[in-house]
Image (cartoon, rainbow, N blue to C red; front, top):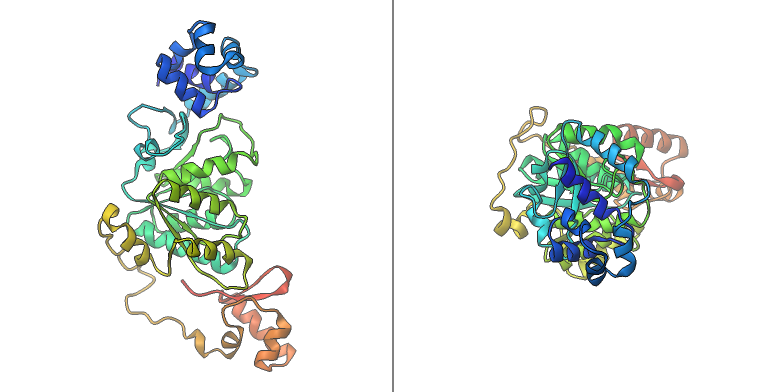
Length: 373
């Protein structure tokens, strides 16, 4: 995209009052942004209203700084602006009710057009089991050639990106900030790795946009729109992940949910989705079966060198403490009452199980079993 072109696009979209719907009306009426900005005041007012028309004839506040910032960003390798209607614009988003007009992409734009793509989303306050599930599903799907799309948030999102990278796959992060920012900051290294691995970070917001609460529900429509289905791993009833799932359903995409304990708040959103018709998922094959008409048959990944075929799973059920713990969160006193061990012996055994990664300690001191992936 030529400098004058991207400047016109950016100036149009940073004008106060010009959202995606108004921008599309103006583009439909007058053509490219340069022609929109050259229209007489009366013509602009006819399409966008008098107040927006006046603002379109003025320089937006902070425009010179944003133009310089964007020019510097675009000068770096792997940084792109992709406008609605350009060949590189993701075709999947064109089939959504509210496609963004301009995308900032850091990484490979081809990752946004993957032939097989699945969103994996869930709670920011995930349980250890939820994190393990997200990593395991993402890893196996990525190893079979599926691009994993998520939001780079803490919790399930981060685990999904990690799982895809561990399997050598491609993952896309749709962010609610500018594409030059990483939120949360602790995911800086993760963001860099996913770009280096052939994935991308994508945003519809101008560079420098901070993590504003209102932006995250809107970015969820892009997570749903870029994929053929959405898997919700864990979600409370008020979770933003349910917004993504609802948007996916409205777009005609498949919605999947992993069930959990009836006592866990992080499972209630998934259970609500299942009651509403989402597909209950226990294995990757359950997802493949629903999407085979779109994806074709996925090839099973080759066995890893460190996991020989036929290796037996650990015999966790032989451990009396794990049997007593079950699969629901439990506090120490209740566990002790179930298994009858004295305090010192039980604490020592739990420590060994934690170090082995099969038991995790939750906030409030409760314990939860973590199934091995």
